[in-house]
Structures are given as C-alpha cells and as structure tokens.
Length: 296
Image: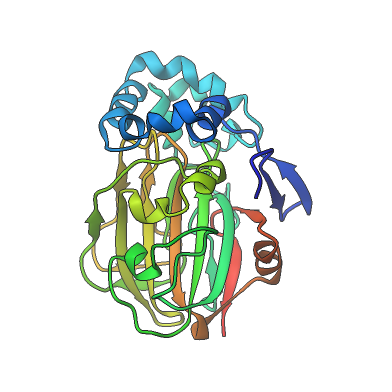
C-alpha cells in the first residue's frame, strides 16, 4: 500500500472507495515527515497525549466537534440510538449505540460474524512464531497474542475501525471465556495504514487487551483490542464467562482502533471476497453482525 490515497472495497456495493480520514493532514505529517517522526516519543510513546485528548472529548466543550465527524462520508448519525442533539460530548456520540435493527445479524451457528463495523483483512496459514501479517513487521504472532500458541497454522483477521465507524464491538459467535482478560500496556500509535507503513510492528507495540475464548463451533480463538492515538480508553462492558453471538463486548473512546481475531486455520474458512481482496492488499468494509466466515 502506497502513501497516497487509502482505498477499500465496499462489499455491499462492490465499489472501490477512497477513504476520507479525519485528521489526515496531521497523520501524514506525523508519519511521512522527518520532523513529525522526531515527535513520536511525545505523541505516541505513552498515554499522556491520548489521555489529554480523551479528557477534552469527554467534556461538553467537545460537543461542537460532533458536526465535523458526521460530515465525513461513512458516518451515518441516523443509525444512532438517539438524535445527535441528545449527546453531551463528542465521546458520548462517538461511543453511541445503534437503533434496534440497524444491523442485519446472521444467526446461523456455523457462521462467524464481524465483531465490529470496519475494514477487514484476513491472513491464513500463519505460524505463531512468524512475524505478524504486515509488510516489514518483525514481531511474531505469539508476541501479538501475549502467549505461546501451538506451532500450527493460524488465521489472523484484522478489523480496523475508522473514526466514522460505530465504535462498539461484539462477540462474533457463541463462546465461553478461557481465563482472565490480559492487558498489555504500550504505545499509542495510529492504526491507520499510513502509520503501518512506518511502524509495521505497531499492533505489538501498542496497548492492547487480549482475551481467550472457546467456541463449540470454531474452537479456541483470541480477540485482541488494540488502542491507538487518541483512544483515551478501551472499555470492556461485558461480564461473566458465557456469551452469545453479538453480545456487546466493549467500546473504544475517540480514535480509530482495531479488533484482531486469531483462529486455528483448520477450524474456519473466511469468505472468498475477503480472502481475494486481502491477497491484493485491499481491505473490505464490513458491518457488525455480517457474515465473514464459516466453520470448515
């Protein structure tokens, strides 16, 4: 992927779409200029700057910024649970729930659904000791997952959320928790492809939440939520140990971020359009609850 326009496949229309990025100029300055890269330790080296941004976006003063977000193509305020006027801050709207019926959910037990709205890419037959599936990356899938996985093929699905997206994420299938949530503190780089070109190991370097699950259909799998620049918090909202498909798992506050899922390759087959696009280094826009894979 080059440093020019970001494009993805909209699977609903079949069209290639140019992504409109909130704060695109600042993002490209930070990652594509020498001066911007010298500021990395300050901007991305810890939670301080992102926490300051989060504090502002939690305040009533940020309410005026909602209009900037809703003006970007891809943000549909009519899907929100309440009218825009209801939300008291930017983050209040950013972490909005949707109206009932706003997403069509595939309830077939043999189907895996997308855990979030976002742009998905899928990489099959990866050994856990090999680097994560980003060109130029050196850190392993084991390091990404914070554990040592069996030395067998895995499939990694990356769902990247842009600021315009619905920012709550859900369980992609019926499953049970396998141990406690693991939180690994780290940096707060942007997860935009522009940043990945310059920092291909950022999924391992950034703060992330890691949870293991067992599905009666898809076997053992992991879900990883990755924090990013501007994400003041990853909020886990679910409790207990047993979950149904599309139960809410949590949400991100302001900033683009990422949900990564790791499955044993011999248990799952992702949809052909996603695999074809991923092989061409193209993300596919998917909606929360939509069909993305089936059991093998």
